[in-house]
Length: 186
Ligand SMILES: Cc1cc2nc3c(=O)[nH]c(=O)nc-3n(C[C@H](O)[C@H](O)[C@H](O)COP(=O)(O)O)c2cc1C
Image (tube, rainbow, N blue to C red; front, side):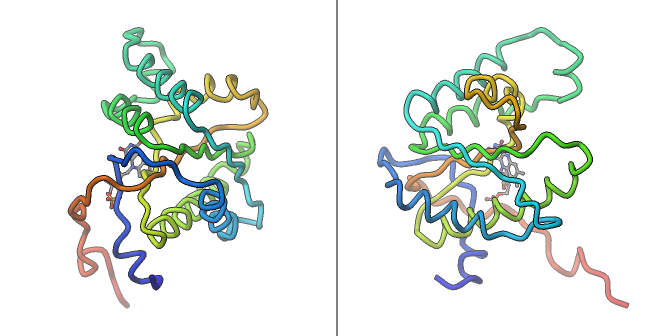
C-alpha cells in the first residue's frame, strides 16, 4: 500500500478478531514508530507489549477506576471521560496492547508529547499498510501510575497505548473537516 492509501484508509478499530499477531509483525510495526522524527532527536519512547492476562489487568484497572466514585482532586483535574470503560473493553478484545512510555521530564513535556504523536501515527499507518487495525488510546492515563507500578517502571511516565489486532469491522470514516475550512493563504 502506498503512503497516501495508508493515510486515507487508516481508521480507529474497536473490534478485533480472536486472532493473535505474531511477534515479528508487532516488532515490524514498532520499528516504524521508532523511525519517526522527534524534537531534538530525543526519541522519547519506550514500548512495553502486553498480551493475555497482563493486558487484561490493565483493562481491569481502568474498569475499576470508572467504578470509583471518589471525586478526588486528581480525578476532577483529569476530567475522566465516559469512554474509559468502553476503551477498556477494546483492550480486552485486542490480542496486543502496546504501552508507550516517555521519560519523566516536565521541561520536555510538549516536545516529547509531539514526538510521541509522530511515533504513534507511524505505527497506525504501518498497521493499516499490513491490513491490520489499531486503536490509539489515551484513556489509559487515568491508571498510568498503577500501570507503571505494576510493571516496575516508576522511572517512566505512561503517555498512551495502541491496541492492535485483526479488524472485525470496517467502520465508515469519521467526519473530517474540509481543507477549505482549516486553511488560510496569504
Ligand atoms: C491522542 C489520541 C487519543 C485517543 N484515545 C482514544 C481512547 O482512549 N479511546 C478511544 O476509543 N479512542 C481514542 N482515540 C481515537 C479517536 O477517538 C479517533 O481517532 C477519532 O474519533 C477519529 O476517528 P478515526 O481515528 O477513525 O479517524 C484517540 C485518538 C488520538 C489521536
